[in-house]
Amino acid sequence: MSGSSEIIRAERLGFKYAGTDKPAIQNVSLSIGRGEFVLLTGPSGCGKSTLCRCLNGLIPNFYQGEISGDIMVDGLSTSKQLTSELSRHIGYVFQNPENQLFALTVEKDIAFGPENLGLSRAEIRSRVDSAMHVTNTVGLKDLAPYELSGGQQQRVALAGVLAMQPSMIVLDEPTSFLDPKTAEEIMSAAEQLRQDQGITILVVEHRLDLVARYAKRIIVMNKGEVVADGGLEETLDTQFEMLTGLGVGVPRVSLLWAMLRRDGFVTGRVPTHVEEAADSLSKRLGN
Amino acid sequence: MITLEQVWFKYPSGSLALQEVDFSVESGSFIAIMGENGAGKTTLAKHLNGLLKPSSGRVLVDGEDTRKKSVAQLARKVGLVFQNPDHLLFSESVRQEVAFALKNFGYPADVIETQVKRTLESLDLSEYADTSPFLLSGGERKRVALAAVLAWEPDYLILDEPTIGQDYQQKERLRNFILQLYSQGKAVVMITHDVEFVAECNPQVVLMSKGKVVGSGSADRVLSSDQLVEKASLVKPQMAKLFARLKPQGFPGDVVDVHRAKMLLEAKLVEVKGSVPQSP
Ligand SMILES: Nc1ncnc2c1ncn2[C@@H]1O[C@H](COP(=O)(O)OP(=O)(O)OP(=O)(O)O)[C@@H](O)[C@H]1O
Ligand SMILES: Nc1ncnc2c1ncn2[C@@H]1O[C@H](COP(=O)(O)OP(=O)(O)O)[C@@H](O)[C@H]1O
Ligand SMILES: [Mg+2]
Ligand SMILES: [Mg+2]
Image (cartoon, rainbow over all chains, first blue to last red):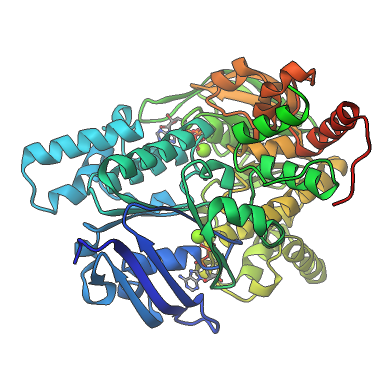
């Protein structure tokens, strides 16, 4: 089953939290292939984190409410699995990292997951070391989680997920607490994991500029539903107005180009990153 | 005016988070503090409202030493919105959360009502007035935490990572809100990693690294400087990266904002083509 090329399959998935009167997500159908790098975006409150919680089984196993439709993750039905079993398949870095850390020290926190898989000491050691290396948390290993700054907590949460070596990693607004340089490093580390180990990556992010280099596909949600799902470059080019209308944080170079194009100064496809915009502009400026 | 004079701070665990920091916030100023994770930004913010007191050196709020004041006394003047929104929320409804401090300060009921309504509207939260803050999404919770402090209109507003969880439209709202506040003579200090947001707001920027202030200047100057950006683990905003590449074409070196970029490019494109644009 886990040999299938599809890692996520959702069909008409919906969820309404207990005590609320409208569903947080509804009618979500999507399929994610093994080894894809996907960006999930949409206005604040549109249901992105709720969808993530369905993927790793927090919904319906921890959150009260009504779930509808179907969701399969790595060939498993999330409602029939323990979340501890699911965590070997899918790792989720929470939007608020503080809620994810509980051990007495950073190192113990990162080792907690692998220890519960019953791995050998040597294997645990090597996973923890490599996760700390990738996330640049070696220097923090003896600190308590409450002694960390916001961004340091987020790196530790990510290290804990990496150490589990899951087939898929979901990062829920990972860059919000990270300094810009670390944000870039973490994104490129995620891409490296994808290339080297075929790990599927789903990133929830408002700023497209931070992921446009890596994500080939974009899924856009609004009011609990998927409103666009396709190639990142084509979607930016052909649905630009829809995206900005929803409040999606398009890359500034794309915005610049779209404005110049609207006013008749340039023609052609909206660029998605700086180098591409610079080349096109240099050409037009005769150089 | 808030002034930090030669402030050092060490957490009980022994970690030295601030070293010889001199820093001041004048009325009507707008400052962004930027720098790497663990640089000491949040620690500095907590000194501005007296939540933390310096290990040595002193902090003066309108001339008074924060050591001699309680946090409650200082709160009326200096409002701090925490980086992590969950640290502030405790009421049963969003409305109560936002009214809480106003009640504590003894405002009459009708003033509280209009003030709460206005603040909720300006942050796009009206539809959640009767909802529990704990049932909201991360970005919504962050806006409730903001509203709870904005409602009492402190003279100094300290925002720790205000754009967390916010989509572009919410950021635009926030930007307008901030502009409005400091045009009324309030001081706004925001801590942020969002270089694009800073490029669009164009505040004064103060850079921190390893517990020290390592540079400052206007946003366009700081964010387009290779040296300063490197020093504070930042990354240039896209317009600065783009114009660094377009430098051979004779553009200025300090473009960080998309609207200025557009004007400069339009002028150049017309000059090169020797013609006016055709409408598509
Ligand atoms: N409660 C605490 N106890 C002990 N050490 C702490 C505590 N809070 C922060 N520190 C340490 O103080 C230093 C500065 O932390 P601070 O939270 O001020 O950083 P920051 O600049 O706000 O970082 P970020 O961008 O990640 O939020 C860090 O080295 C951190 O590990
Ligand atoms: N634990 C919860 N209980 C009830 N409602 C919730 C809960 N978490 C989120 N919601 C609601 O569900 C909707 C979607 O939230 P969320 O998935 O967190 O959005 P996003 O991650 O896109 O910002 C929002 O309207 C939010 O208020
Ligand atoms: Mg969310
Ligand atoms: Mg901080």
